[in-house]
Amino acid sequence: MEVLIYPNPILKCKAKSVEEIDEEICQIAEAMLDTMYDACGIGLAATQVGLSKRLVVLDVAGKKTGERVFVNPYIVEEQGEAIEEEGCLSFPGLSGKVMRSQSVTVIAFNLRGEKLKIEAEGLLSRAWQHEIDHLNGILFIDKMTPASMIANKQKIKEFELVYHDNNASF
Ligand SMILES: [Zn+2]
Image (cartoon, rainbow, N blue to C red; front, side, top):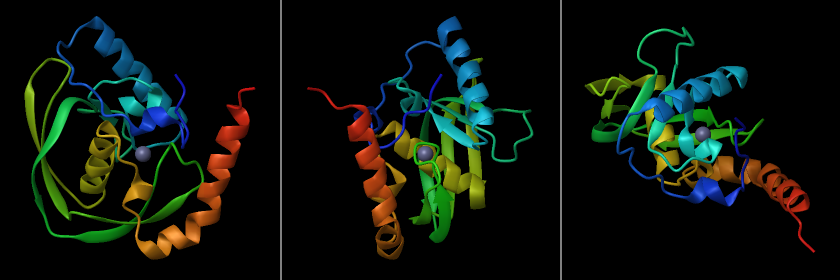
């Protein structure tokens, strides 16, 4: 499984809901966890590996235990505001400040089909908002503060040049 790098157009697509939690979904989730840990990430959305499924893996503490796979997650409540630095596996080496809600409440299902209600704040809240944005085709540069955007303008341009060089057609 490979993480798609910006500006791959698939990253801009809105993912479809998972209709049934079957063997295929479990296998995809397993592979996504491996991919996330290999890349030293704390979260990964299925859209980042080219799959149009509302599926997220998340392990902010990096403990490799507990509930880490989430199906069809959505935010039901958000509170406050916080600006912090964040990065993204689809933008290796790039980071910038993004305004997010301070805390969020997320509803999602685990692989056993059980409904979960997650109250998140701080880094976990930020990670949730970042991953759910991915499922909706929204990238963190779309929400970066103007100052961070200016600071990263050249790096973002380089991602675009590399991508177009690698995908040139004649
Ligand atoms: Zn990301």
